[in-house]
Image (cartoon, rainbow, N blue to C red; front, side, top):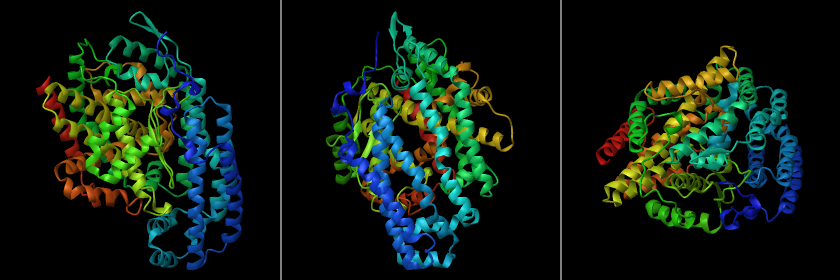
Length: 596
């Protein structure tokens, strides 16, 4: 048997993140949780029904900042520990204690934004004039006025918060606790399968038999949970639809985009232009990869392969540190120090183990580390994931210059710093090399990881979401089979008739947790559009651009997504940055054709 996953307690502690940087142990965490609940009672008693003048609002918002910083610490400690060991009952109990505390306290905090929304606009502008660090937060309160419910209704919705969260919790439970994948045979060997093994290794393997057989095993299990997962997902989007109607929006999509402060035009443009104009370049790329692997046909299980190469070797986490500092060093001493600290102080969880969440992410405490989750394979693909997550880390470490109320920018911008790092890493290496084989390898990795992942995988998720929400708002019947039909049709539209996109591909929607985070998927391609433009500028004009880019990242949510991009020098009010990005991908494929 190969690739059996170790238990969490059996992995090298140096490959794990150190959550004792938040609280030294569960006892200290629980003491903080008790203190937090008392703090909320005091806050409610001090300010509920009293936010009627500039002075009182200012005092309340300062106290509210302290509460949000504490919530950041509590939530990260509760869920980071669980995310790397989801079968651990003690950690699950600790996370449940947090959820119970939030369920009890969130309704007691809901009055703050409700009462602020009921005040005259002139009063809120007075607060802004005296406390400009809260400008974005208070302007957003003003923006939401037309959609605000009565105080009783807002408090009732807050009380139902845990219920609205339940579909996502059910999805995670199904994914990590109920799903078990059958062993499979390939090359006369028996292999274990799991979400982590399939998504991080098998799916991009250059071994065709291993790749295709693992896919059969993987999707066989997903099919068994199709209807349960569909019911879970549909419950989630119906909750969103109900709130959209209550708040007076014309559609659920409009409601979700309003939260991002993004127009429907930008959302639709991102999907429509990529579906039409990027697809030909990506078809060309995949055909090149298939030819280099000697494939007689291209199935959906073959789409994510990169170029076979002698350079496709595994490197250690320590080797990746030097590698990334060399590539991203142009971003300055403070940025390099952040990268070094992330390794030295164990912000990064590299381990592969049973019960660990899939994929990668970066979760930053407002007053602490940026924790990065990976399942390290050591391949170039994974190095680019680390560059991506360090982009998030650098962004949010810089954004701490803002109040926590003006900290997190719109989702439309959130992926720009991370994807810029991926492009910058590969392009730096391309400039440093004269070896055509190495260049071809890097270009194939850049396309198959960065552009495929962000502008194909996630964009096709966005196209799926748009169709599902549209049908939902037309009161059409939806179930697991129909969701699979929608996904399959979108995949076939993008890839065309030359590729063998089988029925199993329709199940791909089951894999994505992004569907439980509003309209998150399209923002990856939006971010990469900005990120590609910035990487080009950072390479060509570092002396002029680096300082401006870092300043943009430090602005947090103080500007809208469009204005943040414009501050950095990218005008997303037009389709030029998106079309330039697609042209750049086409040029990469052209280079690859010339090199292999």
